[in-house]
Length: 296
Figure 1 (spheres, helix red, strand yellow):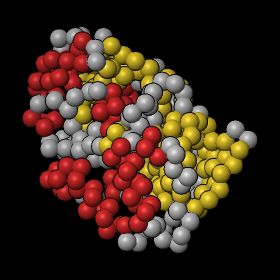
Figure 2 (figure 1 turned 30 degrees about the vertical axis):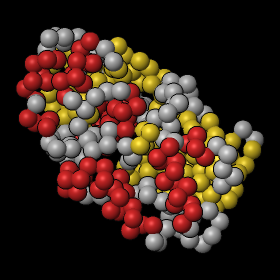
Figure 3 (figure 1 turned 90 degrees about the horizontal axis):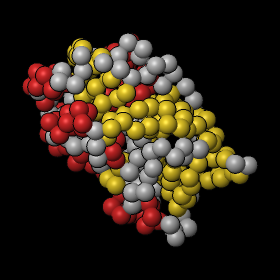
Figure 4 (figure 1 turned 60 degrees about the vertical axis):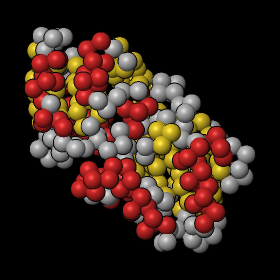
């Protein structure tokens, strides 16, 4: 069996370069061929992942959620996709938390060596792909607006610096959601489309199932011109206690869907897996069990 190891040297606290030889040595105990490619710039992980399809049996990726996002987008439309092994070395590692892949490098490698592969859903939003979250509204820009330097120093707390500043200028988003012959149209402060138990490091969706062909759509309503304090408190409650804490809240909408159409203002930025995805309206579809990934 052939394995390609791709790693981001600048991810998290930069442990990938330091542990490179250990990881390659460990992978060599399972795979006949182990090749290695470090990324040098944004986009490299996607290029390497696309080239791996049909050539390698396993693609091991070491980096954060942004690196995984590149890989998913590159592999989504390819044939003969390799099984994905993930060594999480980013700041929040939401996908890894949801799959119970530890941040400890040796333990993560052990899962690739001794674990099993499972089928994982991904999703398509227009021509872009993601694996764990699609969102827009308040706080959703902090994951890619926060500097790498601050993330390395403060971890996920770095996101609050940007988020607190955003609180005083946030406006709700007018959206129209069309699904199964039904329509919801109103002003909302936040929309989270989640295929993950964790978002931004918080367990907001504990019952999430990564292979059932659906995602959870969470909408927090806000009809005023500015996002009001009570709305922020509602959002904080969801992050602290999970989406189920809002089930009886008339200002929260929780749906489970496999496809839908979302109409947004043309300048509204949509966050995909923690990255700056695209602007404006989109059609959404879950691709059921589209990717194989190693878990414990």
